[in-house]
Length: 186
Image (cartoon, rainbow, N blue to C red):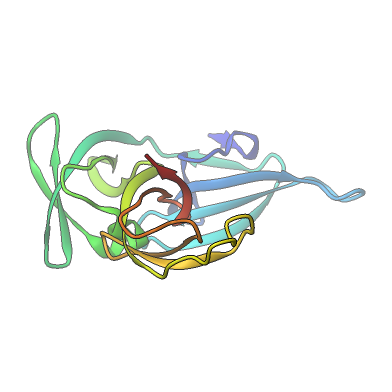
């Protein structure tokens, strides 16, 4: 059993009969009120994200998790096919369970397969990936000092907002958790 103080990203707990992965947890206390923990959780079975609040000291059953390295190989309709780097076994995983993460997949990308009770439940992508800008509108000279952004389409088909100084053909680093621009890569 673990308590609310031990909630951190990556931990898998059982709550209200379901299995949830902790995405974010924060201790919160208003002046005279009792302390609470606010947690953002992802349902392992459905992929849905929920926000919950727990009083300090609430206990949860921690579910043991096994992570194994995999390589993304190719798309197969509604599935993405990954190869286990230990057993060389190929596994098809539904792209719908990856959500926006499916738009970051590139051939030979290294990911982590998360196993619970011997069953592949989710795929963890790297925190950042480098992608190429395919199309974007040209920036206006002199606007490089401001924090303005413009839409850009990346080589995987993903559309994000980038700073005005980014041009077509530039390689950029993108955060896979938030789908936000991080930096330009030389």
